Image (tube, rainbow, N blue to C red; front, side, top):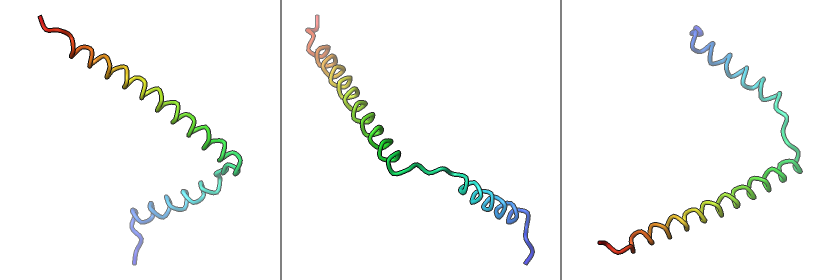
Length: 70
């Protein structure tokens, strides 16, 4: 069976991908834990901000609906 140009490109791509994986510097356990804590803290703070904005917009919308019609 003869290799087609597509198969050669695929094989070359896979070889280069695995070679790039050897260059990765993985975080240590402590670094990974610190990053996770940072992400969870950021998500929690963002959730509080979005909840506050949602609450204020809801109150404003309710206030507008309760205005008397002239």
